[in-house]
Image (cartoon, rainbow, N blue to C red; front, side, top):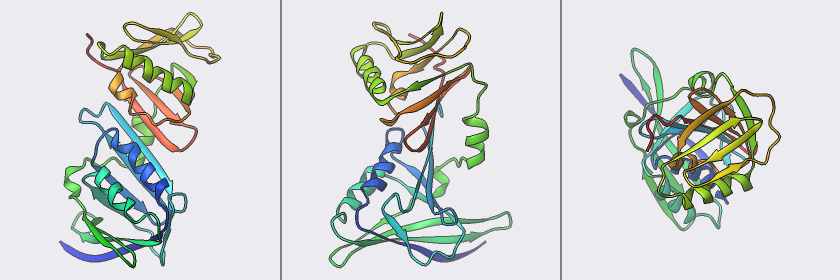
Length: 261
């Protein structure tokens, strides 16, 4: 096995959009496998909980994240293991008022099977301050290829669908917090209505339902709260809900809760 060290350099001034994007993954896990796609000029990441009953995939363009890549002549996708998202965000916040650089040092790891590009260190620097963050090993992550998520995890035979707006999402989370002695919530398509309910509440969603058959699915409340505060198109299948954001390139899949109180 041979290795070659290289780097990717970005310039930035305000990275609030980037740190805000990173935060959406920390609701599920503080560690993250960040992918830098130099050909498409986007950051991509997928994360999941320990049981893999919640899986989220999202992407953001370099420029939308507030970053400009230097001398972009490469098409490689580099994988960067972040051990602690909140800590990395706090470090980036130290640089947020003036222009600075972010350099990703990575290795080209060549084996008999394939070639991988793995981040080693993140270096942040302006004229007054330098900081560095060691990347964590890729071995702690179970990698999910893009097509596996798109074609398998987030693809279902849809029983029914509905829209979920920010205000309704916030209201459901408030109702769930009041219904705090019960771990589960239920989405039900029944008799021309779409309802969400807990143990002590039932709410009809403010939507115009289409044609659908009766169906219901229970999920854990602490998984529903991992959804970002955005507007969604939601598809219900036999064993999972797929939430596709209308406001960002983000899809969250929440699986059916298998046990009950």
